[in-house]
Length: 167
Image (cartoon, rainbow, N blue to C red):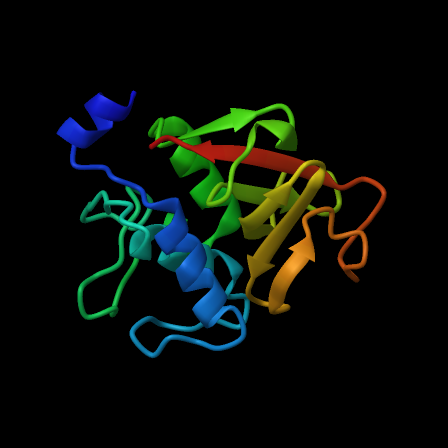
């Protein structure tokens, strides 16, 4: 897959994405818009700063993009459920069954109440055996356990979507 992605101009540098998340996990980069619920905007920034190429469209519900002057963006840029579907349907990410298959720079989505709508997203910043740590915005998190069992949003019905970025 690596060579076909290079031909398409997709080069994702996981370390750059993680370095960006480490630099901005607790503040907002003025280069980008900021939202009250900022988790997916932050994850999109991490992907983009890691070299993930935008897929532009004139329609907000298509592709994954932010306008160069940041006056407009796709729904998938800022909404967890939409980014998850974009990654899967565009084949730029593959949903895997277990976090064991993930690497640093991959993305985890959270459906806190288990109703099928994913409300949160994080980026993996460290993986050491069974220990997986993530960074996130909204409730700003730095090297937090991916399970989010300490979150006020956590419920016993939580579902995770593990997305391996195709690079």
